Amino acid sequence: MSKRFYLTTAIDYVNGQPHLGHAYEKIVTDVIARAHRSLGEEVFFLTGLDEHGLKVQQAALAQGKDPQQYCDELADIWKQFAAKLELTNDNFVRTTSSGHKAVIQSILSKLHAAGHFYKSTYKGFYSTTAETFLTEKDRLPDGTFDVSYGKVIELEEDNYYFRLKEHQQWLIDYIESNPNFIAPSYRRNEVLGFLKNNTLEDLCISRPATRLNWGIPIPFDPAYVTYVWFDALSNYISIPSAHGDPTVCSALNTTATASPAPMELWPADIQIIGKDILKFHTVYWPIMLKAMGLPLPKQVLVHGWWQKDGQKMSKSTGNVVEPIAVIDEWGLDAFRYYVIRELAIGPDGNWTDAGFQSRYGSELANGVGNLLNRSLTMIKKYRNGIVPAGSNQLQAESTEARARVIADYQTNELQDALAHIGGLVTRANQYIDQTAPFKVAKDPQRAGELDQILYTLADVCRIVSVLLWPVMPGASEKIQQQLGFSAFTGRFSEADVPIAANQAIGEVFALFPRKDIPPTKNRAIIA
Ligand code: MSP
Image (tube, rainbow, N blue to C red; front, side, top):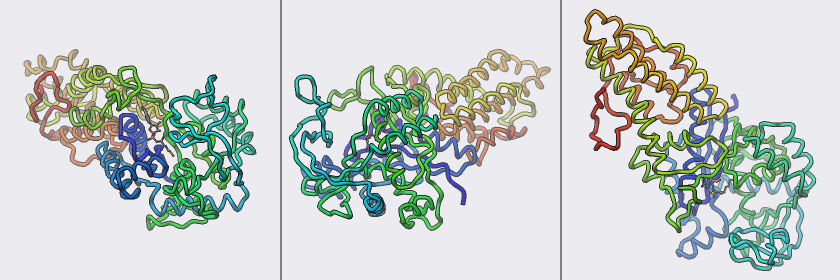
């Protein structure tokens, strides 16, 4: 058994609406997962849902539904969303599943037995909206709390706490001696700054069942349920446990419930999250893992947030991007392409419809779409749809692009990968303009020259399709089909096998129909 390349997304709140931000995180993760499969690695990609908590309990109640039924209905919507994005996730975790609950209880029992928890009385302020306790530090100068906390009540309550302070210096040392643990580096600096300038407060890990019953009961005190974040973070190991991962199963004393063959998954290779949940993943989660005797993930990769038209997306003002509507109108490949091409993993992004349409027009329709269409239309017209014998006159550029793009995928520089593929496409489109095959075709004496040009174009289209696969699997497979290939594995190694002379190309159709002219199905755009 060899360890799989294991990567995870954050798990979404089941009662939220799937929007651009959720889609982005999942697509980024899917592109990385596919790129590693293209490299020939065995991959395990996990995404899923965070289903416990007061808000879910209250929303179910308001609709007169049993919370589980309420979650099941919403989970279907999220699963359809994942399918719409063509995610290649290997499992879909739900924190209300019995397997997950059993693992959380094992973790709690183990940590309790080892003395990591203590019970204490809390007296103070509590935000019902954020489901969190507030301290004096959270008060505004006028004594009130930020509106984002909603209704703040005074509360006196006994709860269980997880000792964090004693791990603070260890965590600082760990982050300092593992520079790639948190990426990008400015997020790492942010966490180090926080840890060096504050004393960690112990983490409250319970809620009384009388106040919150939609949670996982604490095994050593059934009057309490588990705090949602403790429950949610542990999804990243509850699924490895279900698959019989030896590291997790032996640390927690659990046994496999899912697959017949055990899989080696933990530690995760990359955990992809948004910037708002940095502290949970780089402070609480590492300390939880240490207490469990488990290694830390190799990397927490933190992406920025999308805005629309320079403003926070908000359902109430209607300022949102509806991924499903965009996909239905423009196609999944265009949507996946845009979010990856527009934004590197790290900074915040801004969606504008004009920006989307402009990239669609210039980079997809006029870029890769036009290259393919012009190339294949000419092979049809001048060579009866048969790839002539020749050699790739853009071999040096193709080889260089291939090396750069693969290196970009390996370092998660997905935006650069697309920019470098775009560079090869632009070069090939220029090559058509420079060599003017439509003129060469008029002179029978220059048939050999035309063969070279057409062969070069077919071969560059093939290389482009292989390199594009992680981001635009649909378009990549369509390019392959049009070139006449029948079996495509998506492996990067296929980039090294030149197209064969005499290969019959397939049916030619527009890959990215131009939107300024009414799209007609399967109509070739003439060169
Ligand atoms: N349930 C918690 C995560 C628990 S992980 C153990 C949660 N859920 S969420 O639904 O609010 O957010 C899920 C992910 O979507 C987070 O990584 C978050 O950063 C990301 N995004 C939510 N809105 C976003 C944008 N506008 N832009 C980009 N990503 C954003 O937090």
